[in-house]
Length: 484
Image (cartoon, rainbow, N blue to C red; front, side, top):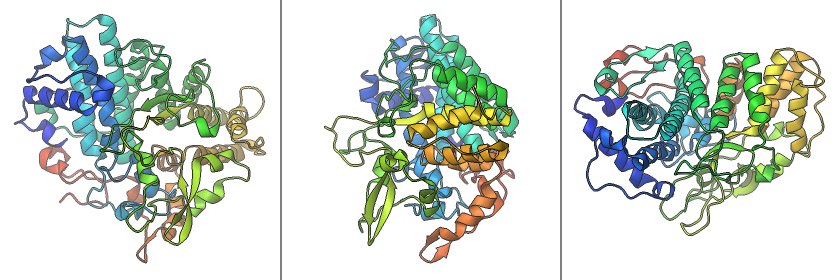
């Protein structure tokens, strides 16, 4: 939680930085000129345009907050830690040797996202200058965003401080909360978001927009809640929430080559990329995967284990991978996002999709399998085969609970590779991470040195700087990692 909760950090400073970042960092998205002077919280949350812009700025900050600086996207980082790739720009991350931090997700999540969500929720709750309908949607968006961030944190770090107010003094010395407590809050935030968000997709002015899908609506809250219930083993709840998403007429499966286009009707919620220099607004994933180093090497072709998991005739292999010459070898590079290099004048054709329909079918398939609904109408195999058939594959031949669950997990591996850490999180929640990573470690080699795996590495270390600013964390680093 670092300097954002330092006692020298005043509320006026917080809101000045909040607005400055919001309005300057996403000009295209927000379309509002920044103020010329500092604006107090009472002004921000009694002005409809500024309040909307503040929430918009949180969405604009998300990609950079999760990415590992400008060098490695979050999806690339997570895939490198798992068994998805054959290399990474960050060698320590690839070798699972993040002994002294290595990722900025903790610090950025609290500083750039959770603090700002809490400020918005608190400020709007006290405001009487914004129409109730607008206020309700903005608070719903903030609670959805807070739930999404905490879901990511708890799956990366385990127990984490549960910060729910913008009170910088109180938050400066807050201990880690147990994962169960954090999940209770995640579920409550998502239920609140379901009740507060619009059924429709909205634009930057919170008017109905049937095209853009970069503001979360009720569908997004429901989709994330289905995922949370799956992770918690609440099978009936996961099935019910996923079914609500699947039945919505605004969503439909599309051909693999169309999935990752902006405003794809398979997309439930996406993040609009921020412009980076003269490279335009292409996604961080594309910039990373499709850009070579000065030696002409691509940083991350997919691993042999992942490549051999594709079945013959799988359309996803053709659409989502591309063969590239890397040095003297040919590697298969992730190609879900195709605009890797460009310029600011190029039209934007891709958004970073965070939630999409195919995952909901796989959530429901797994939940139904765990409930014993294996075959026939409304069954696990029905949902599994919908995803397989979309990929040009025949129906699964799996039978029995164990085979069908294994087939679903294999399908998740193929369908969701290089997306938002799904593989890493799946290995952890299913208890397979030690077996898989012990097998993968000898294949992850940098300069003749192979990775080694130990169970403690399934959790990331709390960044060392955090122990300087929050004394309640001292003595509570994740096992296997130093505090100094």
